[in-house]
Amino acid sequence: MRQQRHPERSPKNIFTKSPTLEEVRRSFEHWRAHRKQRRPIPKSLWEGAVRLCDDHSVYAVATALRLDYNALKRHLYASRPDAASPVTSSDFVALDVQPSPPGGECILEMERAGAKMRMHLKGELGLYPLELIRVFWGPGR
Image (cartoon, rainbow, N blue to C red; front, side, top):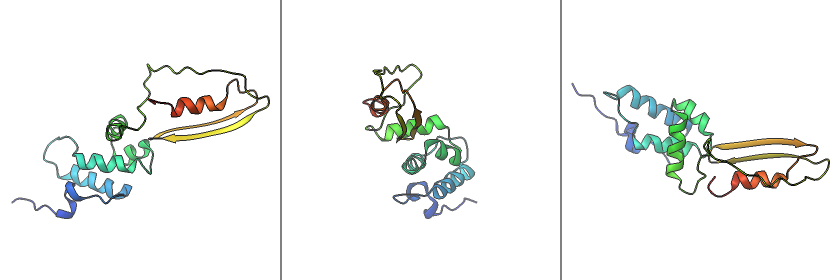
C-alpha cells in the first residue's frame, strides 16, 4: 500500500515568506522520517534553513535543524552573492596600526551574515577601532 502525500507537508510548498524555526524543524523531521534511502537534502529545505539565518545565527539554525554548520554556511553564501564570503584560515588580514587616543574605551558589536564580533577595549588600544570595523565589513569579507 502506497503512502498518501499531504500537500501541506510537501517540500515544495511548506514555507511561508518568513518561516519559523519550528516550522522548518518539523519539515526536516518529516523529510527525514519519510525518505526511503539516504538522499541529499531537498533544495526547498535548504532554502528554509537559509531564510532562518536572517533572524538567527548560523550556529543556532544548524543546531536546531541538525545540519552541518559548514554546509549551511556554504548554502547561505551561495544564495546571497552580495553577502560576505567566509574567512578561511589561510586569509591574512593586515591592520594599519596607529596609536589610539589615550585612555580610550569602546565596545564593538558587529554582525553580518551569521558572523558576529563583540569586543570591549579599554585603555591604550594600540589601534583605532575603525580599522577593525573596516576589516570586518571590508570588501570580500
